[in-house]
Length: 134
Image (cartoon, rainbow, N blue to C red):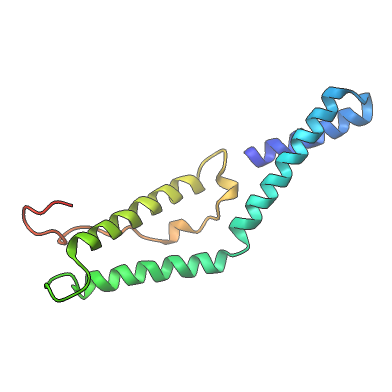
């Protein structure tokens, strides 16, 4: 919605400038144009490297799932401690929840690629021993 407001403001500013040639129309035109330039920069930054972003998220998810499925956290010899794994899973789940919510946000959703619904949350069931806290 924010993108469309900048576009509408630019068009209104341009039309009123052509008709009235007033200071208010120049201000609307400049404000809308600056907003459009910033919007296009944000869209470019978020969409140009999209395949790389998808690959990064898939690899991160696969790495965490590999550690969980192969129980690399179970003994004292491994480098992955149970608490570290739980914290990494919590970070994954929180980041994913935030990005899923933002991509559907009414005001700024157009700026965020609609890719995060393809990823799943990682359950914490069974990772903590009885009485252990994060």
